Length: 399
Image (tube, rainbow, N blue to C red; front, side, top):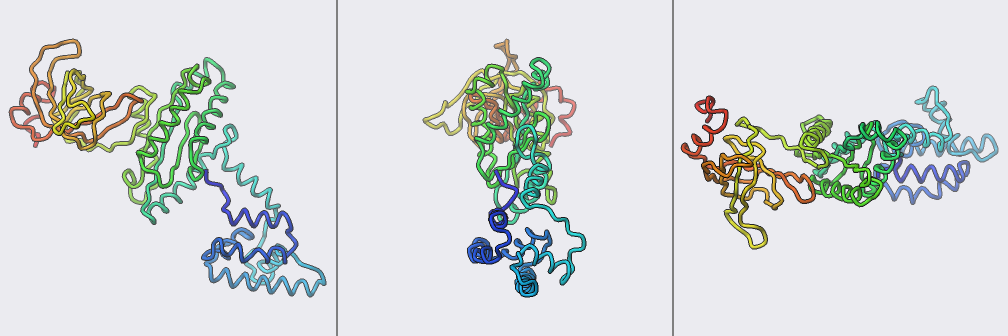
């Protein structure tokens, strides 16, 4: 998890806490600190002390003048003057960039800052912290052309759990779930409680597949932990990533995409992880429970070459959606046979159509959903399929 203070800030706070008035002690550490961040050291240093922003050259000039002021004050007073006094005097009385400084112990400031960014129940970061860092991480992903993923997670049936077991138990569930998220995430990941029973992950330099893999590990821990499994506690999640689901100059577009995917996961039955898929449909989909079978065009030796008696979820003139326990690769070519018989009917006339896998979604450990687009639908196949769907009146308008 990313800390709210950088390594440089932590070092400065430590020096000031241990020996805040010993200028020589602090200055003896400067070379080591400069080496840690040579390009931005002085600008960051002044930002820590007085919360003013300068470019590096200007900051370095101010720092030299502060050191001179520190020596002069020591000579004038006849005693050692600490850095904080010299800095405050410089910006109040010489440079006059500060008008009404608020003096506060730095460890108290650090504690207050963290409390403002932390969820009181789980100890995770809160929505405010997420919102601040989302923009930063999107800008960094843009600059360095790196992946960035967002996952929104919602505990299934949590209101019912609260109603039946009580809010104290519900709070315990939230705490334990937060602990699992933290133990599964990397140090650089940002793990937040977004509100209620909703959590959000901000994962720098992680692809969609990497995010889904992380969430599958969370699912495995949930299923193998008696506290969760005994109470049948599950979660649903929606995943979106940069740059695939990013609209230019709108960092929240990734969050909205993940939220839509979460909604889809809930709609499809909960206890599943779904990647946002911005499908641009040319054809209207209709719920049809027809029997289909498929054959691999280029069958490999490790996977089944064909499969029979799969029931479709929906069908259109453009393609078909179905679920299967078999693994199909993205962009894999299939020969799909569709029978207009229902789930409990073995009759019906089948048509064979070439198709290609255009999306996949993992529904559970042993169940996947597939979207297959039809290729080269000839007029006879089009008429046959269209006649069986409640869209025949639109056929003349289709390209």
